[in-house]
Image (cartoon, rainbow, N blue to C red; front, top):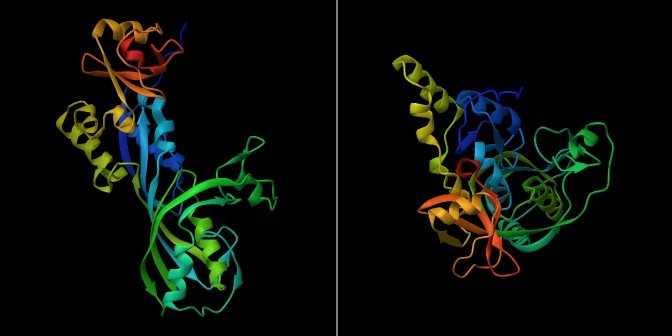
Length: 311
């Protein structure tokens, strides 16, 4: 007998405003529970210290999480100068204290030096895995393991505030995927000669999604309670907060096919249509998004990931 999935089928994306003090996985489970969704996944973990945009993909939208993982991000970060910690943020222990002797011009100059494409070694307190275990688990045991250097791109890094009295700075960073803001702050502290660590981190944007579209756990719970009070299905109010799953794919070229061709596409058959661009393509059949495809060696369209609801 087939095992029935717990929950209801929900397809779409909600831009959750993750609160401080909980893991991204806990935030995911809370949202999944409120929606009573069969399947859900998040797109890029935030540290417990961090707040801000955590896109939650439900159901069929989980097939396209990689596109949000791969997109650029924008953060607002506040750092304490003069102190270096084990984790490069305020959750760690202070390991070194040094006097802060900098000028505004000197600070601006060092910040500018981070712009462009550079190499970055991930923090030992990251969720990247080594031999199947997240790096932070090794770090908590005092074990240092090899980490691969990765290419990152800092598109912009601006100084928003320099609080000399409290020895704090605030910056806005627009960066490529996989960039660790904690590492940038720690490196900046070393360049300034005083050390630094993150005391506040907020992710304001993921790709093209604006911060105004974020919703909190409390807002989701309010929608749930409203539905219960009115005696209607929770989906009545919760699902109106969902964004279409293809909003994660706005940068992809689009190929439009007929409804009949869409059925063939959804069953894995090659579709002969007009010009098929190279790379990954968003596929629309009779005005409806049905999945992503790519060009085969003959120049025709083949499915890469098709929506199950269209099969």
